[in-house]
Image 1 (cartoon, rainbow, N blue to C red):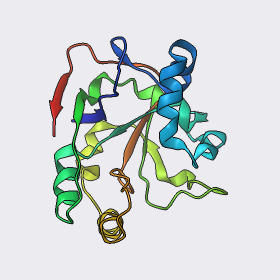
Image 2: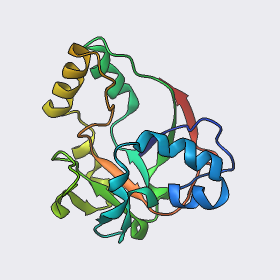
Image 3: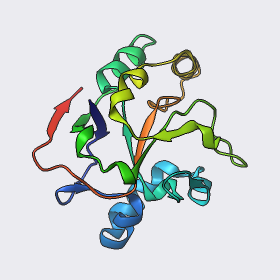
Image 4: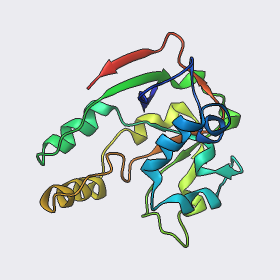
Amino acid sequence: MFLYHKVPSGLKGAEILPLSYLKRVYLAKYQEEMKKYEGRDWLAKFPIPMLKCGWHECIQFSIVPPAVIKQEMEAVDLTFGGEFFEIDAAAIPKAHATVFLYENDIEVDKPWNDLEFVPFDPSYFTDYTWIGSDTRVHYSQCALHERTPMPWYRTPHVLVNVPVSIKGVRRFKV
């Protein structure tokens, strides 16, 4: 089973770093990456169960292949693409990872239900490689109202709170 992560622009080094690490070693890059969280910076104050750290202290990986997201978005005339890493899930240290099922909307006062986090176990990943109806509705509404979609809205995420090596991993374009 594989995990997917969009290749960051201006990537430095041979690891994908959590934002908290990035802040310490590449401040300008950290500030650039934080722009995608504008209006959602409150996410940092809520701890992630199992990992005992904040959202910004983790790397977010997708279990859903980028080609599936592209297909679903293009079905409603939205565009999606880019370059991605495909990382073998076996390379992720289980003690530093969890799966966020993302079954409910994230809100300022209670961003998630602790039950939406399950242990990191790649043997279950085939159960999580789908796009659900909530995600399809989000894409349709964004297309209808000409809003920028969140491609991974309501799709399962793997959160990892340590750097992840990208040496020798597959890079591909969608």
